[in-house]
Length: 233
Image (cartoon, rainbow, N blue to C red; front, side):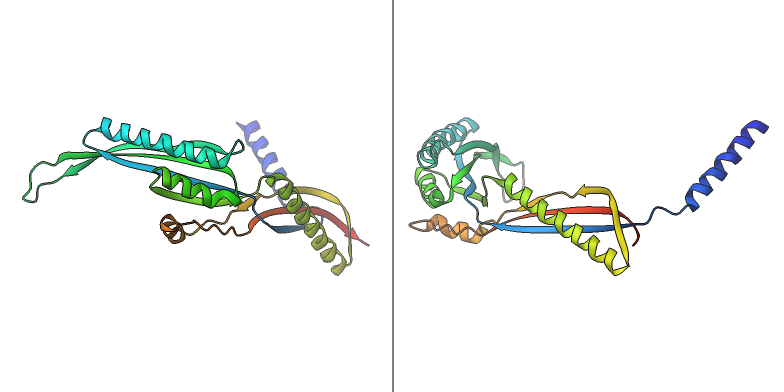
Protein backbone atom coordinates (compact mmCIF):
# COMPACT_ATOMS: atom_id res chain seq x y z
CA UNK A 1 0.00 0.00 0.00
CA UNK A 2 2.88 2.36 0.85
CA UNK A 3 4.49 1.68 -2.57
CA UNK A 4 1.18 2.34 -4.31
CA UNK A 5 0.74 5.68 -2.51
CA UNK A 6 4.30 6.67 -3.45
CA UNK A 7 3.63 5.84 -7.13
CA UNK A 8 0.43 7.86 -7.15
CA UNK A 9 2.24 10.83 -5.62
CA UNK A 10 4.95 10.69 -8.32
CA UNK A 11 2.35 10.54 -11.09
CA UNK A 12 0.49 13.52 -9.59
CA UNK A 13 3.67 15.60 -9.51
CA UNK A 14 4.48 14.67 -13.10
CA UNK A 15 0.99 15.69 -14.22
CA UNK A 16 1.24 19.07 -12.47
CA UNK A 17 4.65 19.72 -14.01
CA UNK A 18 3.43 18.90 -17.50
CA UNK A 19 0.34 21.09 -17.13
CA UNK A 20 2.43 24.05 -15.98
CA UNK A 21 4.91 23.81 -18.83
CA UNK A 22 4.14 26.45 -21.47
CA UNK A 23 3.49 25.19 -25.01
CA UNK A 24 5.81 26.21 -27.82
CA UNK A 25 5.00 29.68 -29.22
CA UNK A 26 2.62 29.30 -32.14
CA UNK A 27 -0.05 31.03 -34.18
CA UNK A 28 -3.31 29.34 -35.15
CA UNK A 29 -5.37 30.80 -38.00
CA UNK A 30 -8.31 29.82 -40.18
CA UNK A 31 -8.55 30.34 -43.92
CA UNK A 32 -11.72 30.18 -45.99
CA UNK A 33 -12.52 30.40 -49.68
CA UNK A 34 -15.75 30.30 -51.67
CA UNK A 35 -16.04 29.78 -55.41
CA UNK A 36 -19.15 30.63 -57.42
CA UNK A 37 -19.41 28.23 -60.32
CA UNK A 38 -21.97 28.14 -63.09
CA UNK A 39 -23.76 24.78 -62.93
CA UNK A 40 -23.78 22.52 -65.97
CA UNK A 41 -26.08 19.75 -64.78
CA UNK A 42 -29.48 19.37 -63.15
CA UNK A 43 -30.97 16.78 -60.81
CA UNK A 44 -34.72 16.37 -60.50
CA UNK A 45 -37.19 14.09 -58.71
CA UNK A 46 -40.32 13.17 -60.65
CA UNK A 47 -43.12 11.05 -59.29
CA UNK A 48 -46.21 9.16 -60.37
CA UNK A 49 -49.15 8.93 -57.94
CA UNK A 50 -52.07 6.62 -58.74
CA UNK A 51 -55.10 5.29 -56.92
CA UNK A 52 -57.06 2.04 -57.09
CA UNK A 53 -59.73 0.14 -55.23
CA UNK A 54 -57.13 -2.45 -54.27
CA UNK A 55 -53.40 -2.27 -53.67
CA UNK A 56 -52.87 -4.35 -56.82
CA UNK A 57 -54.93 -1.98 -58.98
CA UNK A 58 -53.04 1.05 -57.66
CA UNK A 59 -49.69 -0.68 -58.15
CA UNK A 60 -50.45 -1.86 -61.69
CA UNK A 61 -51.73 1.56 -62.76
CA UNK A 62 -48.62 3.14 -61.29
CA UNK A 63 -46.28 0.73 -63.06
CA UNK A 64 -47.94 1.41 -66.42
CA UNK A 65 -47.67 5.18 -66.05
CA UNK A 66 -44.15 5.07 -64.68
CA UNK A 67 -42.96 2.96 -67.59
CA UNK A 68 -44.15 5.67 -69.98
CA UNK A 69 -42.51 8.38 -67.83
CA UNK A 70 -39.17 6.54 -67.78
CA UNK A 71 -39.20 6.19 -71.56
CA UNK A 72 -39.88 9.90 -71.91
CA UNK A 73 -37.07 10.81 -69.50
CA UNK A 74 -34.54 8.54 -71.25
CA UNK A 75 -35.48 9.96 -74.64
CA UNK A 76 -34.60 13.49 -73.50
CA UNK A 77 -31.75 12.76 -71.07
CA UNK A 78 -29.78 10.59 -73.50
CA UNK A 79 -27.01 8.16 -72.62
CA UNK A 80 -25.40 10.48 -70.06
CA UNK A 81 -28.52 10.75 -67.90
CA UNK A 82 -28.89 8.62 -64.79
CA UNK A 83 -32.18 7.40 -63.34
CA UNK A 84 -32.78 5.78 -59.97
CA UNK A 85 -35.79 5.08 -57.77
CA UNK A 86 -35.77 7.13 -54.56
CA UNK A 87 -39.18 6.26 -53.08
CA UNK A 88 -41.95 3.71 -53.56
CA UNK A 89 -44.98 3.27 -51.35
CA UNK A 90 -48.52 1.91 -51.29
CA UNK A 91 -50.79 3.22 -48.56
CA UNK A 92 -54.47 2.68 -47.75
CA UNK A 93 -56.99 5.51 -47.78
CA UNK A 94 -59.59 5.14 -45.01
CA UNK A 95 -63.24 6.07 -44.93
CA UNK A 96 -64.44 7.15 -41.51
CA UNK A 97 -68.22 7.26 -40.92
CA UNK A 98 -69.51 10.67 -39.79
CA UNK A 99 -71.50 9.21 -36.95
CA UNK A 100 -68.56 7.19 -35.65
CA UNK A 101 -67.80 3.55 -36.06
CA UNK A 102 -64.88 1.61 -37.42
CA UNK A 103 -62.92 3.08 -40.32
CA UNK A 104 -62.74 1.02 -43.51
CA UNK A 105 -60.27 1.05 -46.40
CA UNK A 106 -61.81 2.92 -49.32
CA UNK A 107 -58.89 2.82 -51.78
CA UNK A 108 -55.12 2.63 -52.10
CA UNK A 109 -52.56 5.18 -53.26
CA UNK A 110 -49.32 4.08 -54.94
CA UNK A 111 -46.42 6.52 -55.20
CA UNK A 112 -43.22 5.99 -57.16
CA UNK A 113 -40.52 8.69 -57.32
CA UNK A 114 -37.48 8.52 -59.60
CA UNK A 115 -34.46 10.82 -59.63
CA UNK A 116 -33.00 11.91 -62.94
CA UNK A 117 -29.44 13.20 -62.56
CA UNK A 118 -26.54 14.25 -64.79
CA UNK A 119 -29.08 16.09 -66.93
CA UNK A 120 -27.80 18.84 -69.21
CA UNK A 121 -29.35 22.11 -68.03
CA UNK A 122 -30.37 23.14 -71.53
CA UNK A 123 -32.78 20.18 -71.78
CA UNK A 124 -34.12 20.26 -68.22
CA UNK A 125 -37.29 22.13 -69.13
CA UNK A 126 -37.90 19.79 -72.03
CA UNK A 127 -37.39 16.78 -69.73
CA UNK A 128 -39.95 18.08 -67.22
CA UNK A 129 -42.47 18.69 -70.00
CA UNK A 130 -41.90 15.23 -71.48
CA UNK A 131 -42.25 13.51 -68.09
CA UNK A 132 -45.46 15.37 -67.23
CA UNK A 133 -46.84 14.69 -70.67
CA UNK A 134 -46.15 10.98 -70.17
CA UNK A 135 -48.00 10.83 -66.84
CA UNK A 136 -45.76 12.24 -64.08
CA UNK A 137 -47.92 14.21 -61.67
CA UNK A 138 -45.48 15.01 -58.86
CA UNK A 139 -42.41 17.27 -59.19
CA UNK A 140 -40.64 17.17 -55.83
CA UNK A 141 -37.12 18.48 -56.17
CA UNK A 142 -34.92 20.28 -58.68
CA UNK A 143 -31.40 21.48 -58.05
CA UNK A 144 -28.29 22.22 -60.07
CA UNK A 145 -24.81 20.72 -59.89
CA UNK A 146 -21.40 20.81 -61.57
CA UNK A 147 -19.94 17.75 -63.22
CA UNK A 148 -16.29 18.34 -62.26
CA UNK A 149 -16.87 19.28 -58.62
CA UNK A 150 -13.53 17.86 -57.40
CA UNK A 151 -11.50 20.28 -59.53
CA UNK A 152 -13.43 23.24 -58.10
CA UNK A 153 -13.05 21.89 -54.54
CA UNK A 154 -9.27 21.75 -55.08
CA UNK A 155 -9.28 25.38 -56.22
CA UNK A 156 -11.29 26.43 -53.17
CA UNK A 157 -8.93 24.50 -50.89
CA UNK A 158 -5.92 26.19 -52.49
CA UNK A 159 -7.48 29.59 -51.86
CA UNK A 160 -8.29 28.73 -48.23
CA UNK A 161 -4.72 27.53 -47.58
CA UNK A 162 -3.21 30.68 -49.10
CA UNK A 163 -5.51 32.88 -47.03
CA UNK A 164 -4.53 31.05 -43.85
CA UNK A 165 -0.82 31.49 -44.60
CA UNK A 166 -1.33 35.19 -45.38
CA UNK A 167 -3.09 35.65 -42.03
CA UNK A 168 -0.25 33.89 -40.22
CA UNK A 169 2.35 36.08 -41.97
CA UNK A 170 0.43 39.24 -41.08
CA UNK A 171 0.11 38.30 -37.41
CA UNK A 172 3.76 37.27 -37.14
CA UNK A 173 4.94 40.53 -38.72
CA UNK A 174 2.67 42.62 -36.48
CA UNK A 175 4.12 40.91 -33.39
CA UNK A 176 7.71 41.18 -34.66
CA UNK A 177 7.99 37.40 -34.93
CA UNK A 178 9.06 35.07 -37.67
CA UNK A 179 7.42 31.83 -38.76
CA UNK A 180 9.77 28.94 -38.11
CA UNK A 181 7.81 26.03 -39.54
CA UNK A 182 4.33 24.60 -39.95
CA UNK A 183 3.13 22.55 -37.01
CA UNK A 184 -0.15 21.29 -38.48
CA UNK A 185 -2.62 21.82 -41.28
CA UNK A 186 -6.22 20.66 -40.94
CA UNK A 187 -8.73 20.68 -43.76
CA UNK A 188 -12.26 21.61 -42.80
CA UNK A 189 -15.31 19.91 -44.23
CA UNK A 190 -15.83 21.11 -47.79
CA UNK A 191 -19.36 22.00 -48.80
CA UNK A 192 -21.23 22.51 -52.04
CA UNK A 193 -24.24 24.83 -51.89
CA UNK A 194 -26.53 23.94 -54.77
CA UNK A 195 -29.32 26.30 -55.82
CA UNK A 196 -32.82 24.83 -55.66
CA UNK A 197 -35.78 25.82 -57.80
CA UNK A 198 -38.44 27.28 -55.47
CA UNK A 199 -41.38 24.97 -54.87
CA UNK A 200 -43.89 27.63 -55.99
CA UNK A 201 -42.01 28.07 -59.27
CA UNK A 202 -41.98 24.31 -59.79
CA UNK A 203 -45.75 24.10 -59.23
CA UNK A 204 -46.32 26.92 -61.72
CA UNK A 205 -43.99 25.23 -64.18
CA UNK A 206 -46.12 22.10 -64.21
CA UNK A 207 -48.97 24.08 -65.76
CA UNK A 208 -46.84 26.16 -68.13
CA UNK A 209 -46.75 25.33 -71.87
CA UNK A 210 -42.94 25.30 -71.76
CA UNK A 211 -41.21 24.88 -68.42
CA UNK A 212 -38.66 27.68 -67.84
CA UNK A 213 -35.48 26.70 -65.98
CA UNK A 214 -33.13 29.34 -64.57
CA UNK A 215 -30.08 27.96 -62.78
CA UNK A 216 -28.26 30.04 -60.17
CA UNK A 217 -24.60 29.73 -59.23
CA UNK A 218 -23.24 26.77 -57.27
CA UNK A 219 -21.11 27.80 -54.29
CA UNK A 220 -18.16 25.56 -53.35
CA UNK A 221 -16.63 26.33 -49.95
CA UNK A 222 -13.42 25.14 -48.29
CA UNK A 223 -11.67 25.93 -45.01
CA UNK A 224 -8.22 25.27 -43.55
CA UNK A 225 -6.84 25.56 -40.01
CA UNK A 226 -3.11 26.32 -39.95
CA UNK A 227 -0.82 26.19 -36.92
CA UNK A 228 2.72 27.56 -37.28
CA UNK A 229 5.60 27.76 -34.81
CA UNK A 230 6.98 31.26 -34.31
CA UNK A 231 10.05 32.81 -32.73
CA UNK A 232 11.77 36.19 -32.37
CA UNK A 233 13.24 37.82 -35.45
